[in-house]
Amino acid sequence: QAVVACNRCYTIAETDPCPTCSDPDRDRARLLVVEQPRDVAAFEEAGWRGLYHVLLGHINALEGIEPGHLTIEGLLERVRAGGVEEVVLGTNPDYEGDATALYLRKRLEELPVTVSRIARGIASGSAIEYSNAAMLADALSGRAHMDATE
Image (cartoon, one colour):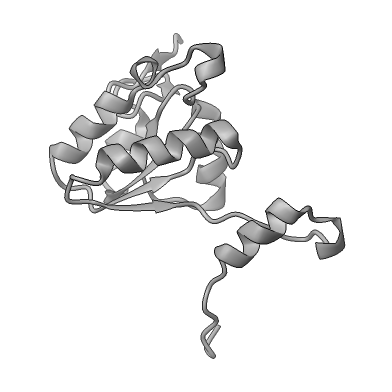
C-alpha cells in the first residue's frame, strides 16, 4: 500500500489521518514537535501518549532551509484551533535543532499554550567521565527535583 503524509501531523503513514491522530485514546492536550517521521517512532517506543507534529526538517540558514520550508504554519494553526495545552519541543539537541526550538518558542509565546523542551544531558547507562562539557552543562541545567517517594 502507498504511504501518504498525514494532513494533521505530517508524519508518513498508510492512512490519512495517521493511526496516531485517529486514536481517540491519545492525550490531545499534549503535542510533541519533532523534526522527522522517524522521530515519531522513537518517541512511541519511549511511551509518549500525546499527539505529534512533524516539521519535516529543521531551520538551517547555511543550507537555505528557512521556517517557510517547514510545517510551522500548520503547527500554529493546530494550536490556534484550541485544545492544545502544552507543546513539547522535541527537536534534536544540536545547533539546528536548538535554533528551530528557539524560533518555535518565539512564534508560540503569544498563544495560550505552555511550551517546554525535552531534557537532555548524560545518556542513561553511560559514565560521567566520558561525557563532554556540553553534555554535563545540559545535565546540570536540566536537573530535576528528587522526591522522597521516587
